[in-house]
Image (tube, rainbow, N blue to C red):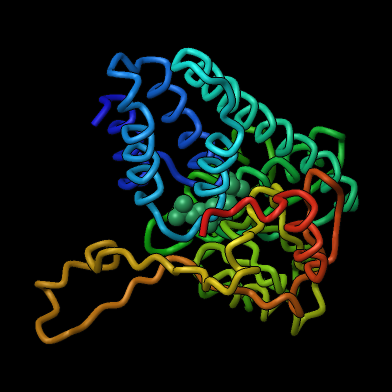
Length: 304
Ligand code: RUB
């Protein structure tokens, strides 16, 4: 396997590179490096490209952004000669990466409009898109406070707390199970997404659906910040979103608990009924418009 591709693949598997947007951009970058540095035979290029793509696709199962990034690059390859194809892959990968980064900025801009001055925001896990909304609201001069969950077992909440504190935002970290206790102090919840299904269900870090349920009970608006490449064309053709289950060791040391079984699903699905809006780079939409987004933006560009 190509060294840089392997490094990126291992980075995604080990979660050194994590978050649906970052893994999508890393996937595009892996294909770019492969194309740039390919020195093999022209006749073997296609087979090698497929191997590399399949390897990248196998790194993590839940975030559709990873697959959408790979198909974005592959479906737009043009040219007849090897050099033309290689150049086209590099161009496509770069176009995906800049589109992705611009989308996050736009989401931040649109989402920040929804944050009222004086608000207390709750977020779960570590989402660059959700953070961008919060940070842009703060930078526009709004006086905000944030509560963020520590996010067991991987503690992505630590990354969130540090990032917000570095921005000078008033941030309080709480344990995941304290969400209902604090919901009375929260004005708005903002989270990210790994995948949005055609029925508008949002798949995000495990615990998101509990946060949504509690917000729904307390009538606190629940918003999702997600680029449109997190919408899943695969779900239109009947595929279910695979929920990644990670090793028990992330929860505790199993040998210290003889006879105890562990389960560690790391994502869950929040039904659209609990979601007030999804902030995309194309605007703020109802979760029930998911099918429309998939149809227009993704053009069902799925390899089935
Ligand atoms: C990360 C997670 C994030 C989404 C969105 O899970 O659930 O909320 O990926 O993130 P993990 P972003 O840590 O297991 O990858 O907005 O940065 O794409």
